[in-house]
Image (cartoon, rainbow, N blue to C red; front, side, top):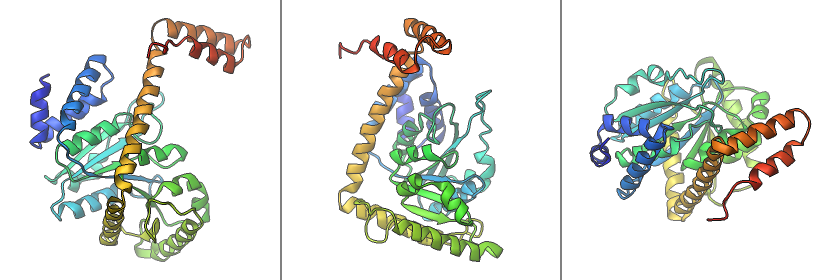
Length: 327
């Protein structure tokens, strides 16, 4: 694989080259990881940046419908939009359906849009392990906005906030039970809460639900990275494409305020440090699965299972055997 040629094609906004590059960074092979690192380093000098928007929501809330409607709304304004959709992987077979292009048929035909489904594999947090690198590739390819869709909503879904500039939480009209089920953690991370399906017989329910969330947001501690009035809750209808203009205006307002007040650069710097720590952590875990370390772990694991040693002491023995003193 000619990395220089692949880099040049990505910079020229070649969609096929972008798809091939994402496949490369998602590979777990050691030689592919080396090539991926070389490619990402060469593209870093392009200096291109996109607005990164993370999106999470409860199953069945209409994330795909929203992304398609919102994506078409943005492309009509001349924006180039990339969608990185993460599908849950089977814990048994490891397979994923990867049906996002089927659910976003109109957007997938738009020349200014790029949709890439990826399996979550074993990575927690609602995103694939290499999604962050895929975002960097989409930025280098000249996309103005990158939408990152997570597999669903849960306590670990806040990881997507560590790779996005704005974090949207999409919810359906419901009562207080769903407000409790969403949990406080993810609400504290959200910049905008969008109550979807505000149409037809559900419109009034959606308005009441939005009011409930707006009241809940007022009880949360004020964040220094937000102007007055944020985070906020609002109603939309992805099916009827209502409320998208207001939502986009709020996103632009919040983004501009953060840029003007230095929060944008600070947030991105902190995210880079977070992912550095994450790469080190994942690298250490990978080392533990090879060679003598794996043999020791299997031996200690058997001893833990037989009750010969406590899990904590066994873990201490494994960590003590790691040789990081040469750093």
